[in-house]
Length: 83
Image (cartoon, rainbow, N blue to C red; front, top):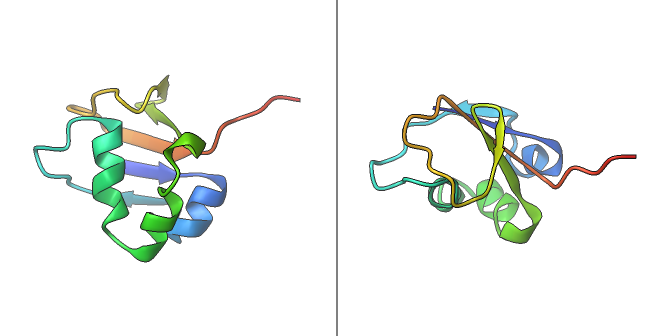
């Protein structure tokens, strides 16, 4: 699956996107974030505070408990504000 990072999440991770193949026991966005956090110090830093993260699966906003079973793309980003 393709994972996209935006704003300060991208800066902490060090890349804007990456192709990953999570293990079969990663079934939700939260599980994916847990698994990604172990990839590097940058990932761990970006994902340390879940309250500051939002996600989209295949371009649809979802909660962190949403499934990722057949997802082609998961985006992880800070909360979006309008103005």
